[in-house]
Image 1 (cartoon, rainbow, N blue to C red):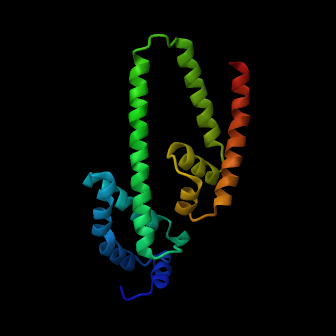
Image 2 (spheres, helix red, strand yellow):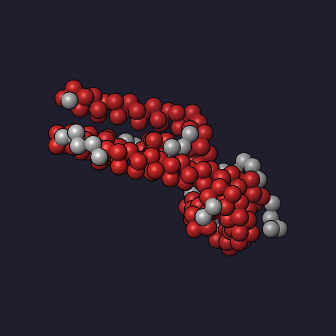
Image 3 (tube, rainbow, N blue to C red):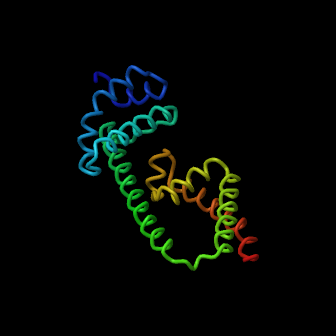
Amino acid sequence: MKHSEKDVIKKISKGDIQLFELLFKKYYQMLCDFGMNYLKNIDEVEEVVQDVFYNIWKNKQQLRINTSIKSYLYTAVKNNSLQKIRIHNLDMKYEKYYKSQSLNDSISPADVMNAKELNAIINKALDTLPEKARIIFKMSRYDGLKYHEIATKLSISIKTVESNMGKALKHFRSYLKDYAETV
């Protein structure tokens, strides 16, 4: 590219689709090759790389890259690939746990009802969180990201992540306090 990196970032953040497409074409195959070191499945790698570019475009107005564009892209592909691996491992653990639990006939209908009620309370508490706190909570607890990873992905400070997680956890404790007293 003939533009400086700061210029590229600035122009993309202002919606320059042609420059974004050039960036995509320049790095797509290299990022896919790099992602294969982690995922070993071309479909998953392409999904990760496309998600990285999608998120850049989606969040272009808040785009802040403090390293080189190449470094940023490679780091994003690495982190997203590792996240995909973590999710896959969690899925496998859950599946193993679920299979072991399904063999155990000691689960009563009351346990099932309590689990459904608790799940409804958790979802209600999650829905009533402010948007930023909800997004950060989901990234931390559902996606398994560390605070610094969340801060990097959202282009915010780690202190902002910590603050929002504190608000979210306080909010959940409040919601779940009443549930704990009835069980």
